[in-house]
Structure formats: structure tokens, C-alpha cells
Length: 179
Image 1 (tube, rainbow, N blue to C red):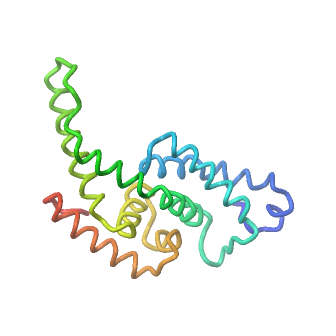
Image 2: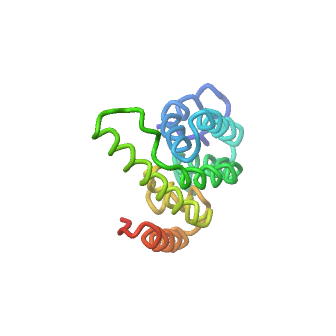
């Protein structure tokens, strides 16, 4: 696997394409789960543009390329946090989709999905930004504690405490045990 910091990728920018090829879809999906898909395309592209420009400063001793890219993406999402919060609050207020389908099971599924998304979105909107980032990096990004710590530039213990607080808040908001 190519490292971003090796001299070849600095001298020959074409080599950075392997980093893009290996991680673009994963980063785009993570952003898409946090924001809308159109924004995800733009922010994923911005993530790799920033990574390309900063590739000479990447320090592999601090962690891998994957958490570094997630950290860049999370910072870009942070710039859009107000829009993200508005989205979660709007989803929390939206009821189930209008009934345009005569099939009983689809109606039930839509109602349950609408209620579930609304409750979950409202619960996520009530988390602090740091707690929400930790939860979504783990849930959407599939990162482990150490990778989340690297992505956010915080200590492992900070990740654990934010996740613990978030679980408590989500459990209280949703009335269910949060894994």
C-alpha cells in the first residue's frame, strides 16, 4: 500500500491517485450519511483536494491514511454543522411520508420509518457536536476508538467519554439500549 508521505507521492502527484481510489467511496458514503448526497460529492472531492495539498505534511507515525481522511472529512462537515443541525431538527419534526400507496405493509413500513428517523434525528440533534462526531464516525464510518481519536485529534479517553455520554443521552431520548 502506498503511503501518502513517501517521496514518490510527493514528487509524482499521479501516485496520490491510489489513495483516492482506495478511499473515495468510503469517505463519500460517510459524508452522505451525515449530509445530503449532493453535498457529499462536493465534500468528498474537497477532502481529497485538501489531502492532496497537505500530503507532504502527512505523518504516518501519527496514524494511517484512513483516519487522516476521516478527520479532514469531519472537519469539513463541521463547517456545515449548522445545516446539519437544521436537517436533524427538520427530520425530527417530519411525520411519516404521505400515504400514496395502497399496500398495507408499505404504509406501516413508511410510518415506522418516519417515526424512527424522526426520533433518531431529534436525539442526534440534542448531542453536543463532539459527541455526535464520535457516534457517527463509529456508526457510519465504521472506525474504532483509536481511529476516531486520530480523526478528531483527541485522546482515546476523550472518545470513550464522549461515546459514553452520547449513549446515555441516546438511551434517555430513545428509551432503548444503545450498543
